[in-house]
Every structure is written in structure tokens, then in C-alpha cells.
Image 1: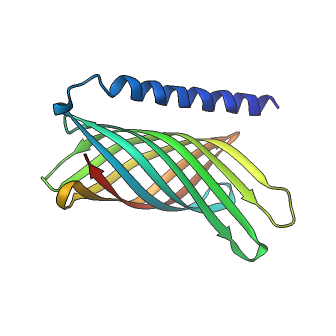
Image 2: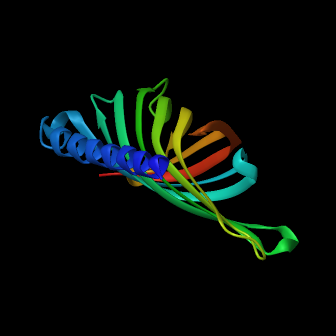
Length: 182
């Protein structure tokens, strides 16, 4: 019971920090120095907590002086697990902070971290559901290629997601998506 209360407190604190960060960074700088992007990504991961999952996420990103990137991401995923009629539901909310390097006008590289909360619910046909609420950490090495009209193609060929809930878990996979600059 104490762990559930502590997990709920940590989640509430994380959500409050994300809201405060967005409220303070939004109007604080001149718009000439800020680029805004909305992106959607899809990832497939295998590993931690006996799961494989496909996650689709949406992010709101701000880029300052074409270098500092801060984004808020929300994702949901589902993965059917074989013939025993079990399945896994994954929800995730993370804050992403990184530095963007731009070796050419059309190619960018983002180096940074994602941190936040992930929730796994594994539904099993004849057994009780397993629910795990975790701290999520992920190093980011994302390549982006500029397309026409403010669109860009983004991908991370190899991802490692670390999850902490009493013990550490790890998933590995890849991610691909698109972003639109406004």
C-alpha cells in the first residue's frame, strides 16, 4: 500500500513539473529564437518485464536558438502476446531534453535524455492482470532529415529504455516518426 502511495506521489510531482516547465518556458523568450514542433513517433521494443510492445507517441517540442530542445511526450501502445490470449498495454509520459547538432542544412542529430513515467498492464487470459508502474529513462540519439514545407523524418535505429520499479528493466528497439515545424 505504501509503494502505491509513493508511486502516485512521484507521478503527481512529475506531472506538476511538466506543467510548470511548459508554463514558464512558453512565453519567456522571443518567438524569433524559438521553433515549435509537433511530432508523432512509432517504436517497437523488446525486453523488460517480459514484454514486447509497439508504442505510438505524440510530442510537443520547443527548440531554442536551433540547439536546446525540450519536449513533452505522451504515448500509448499495445502488444498481443501469442496463443495464450495475453496482451500488454503500455502508457508513457516523458520529458525530453537534448542538444541538437546540425552538420548540414537538411540533417540534424539530437543527443539527450527522456525521463518520465511508464505503466505496463499485462492481461492474461486465465490469471490475474499484472500491473507495473515505473520510472522511465532513455538516452536519445535521433537523426532527422528535413523534408519540404517544415516536415522532417526522424529515426533512432537503436533505442534502450530503462525502467525502474523495485528492480531495473531494459527494453531495446527502434523508433521512426515525423515532425512538423510551426
